[in-house]
Length: 139
Image (tube, rainbow, N blue to C red; front, side):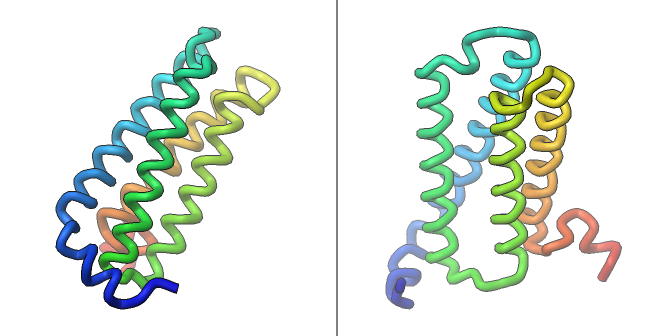
C-alpha cells in the first residue's frame, strides 16, 4: 500500500511527470499508427524485434509515468477506471491490428477501433470525466 507521504513527495515532480506522460503517450500513439499503417501495407518492419522492443519500452515508461501521476495526485475519481478500461481495450485491439487478426480487413477494423479508443482515452484524460468529450453536454 502506498502511503500519503509518497503522493506528497511525488507532487513536487508533477510537471515533469505530466510532461513525460503526455510526451510518451504521443510517441506511443505515433509509433502504433506507423506500425498499423505498415502492417496494413504489408511491410515487414513493423514487426521486427527492435521496433517491437521500442514499442514495449515506450509503453512501459508511459504506464510507469501514469501510475506515478495517480500516486502523486492521489486520484480516486470515477474517470480513472474508465481511462484504464479504455487502455486495456486499446492494447487488445492493437494486438489484433498488428498481429492476431487473421485477415487484412479485420486488422484494419481493429486498427480503427484502437485509434477510436485513443481518442476517447484522451477525452477522459483531458476532461477528467468518464463521459469524456460528451461530459459538457450531459451535465
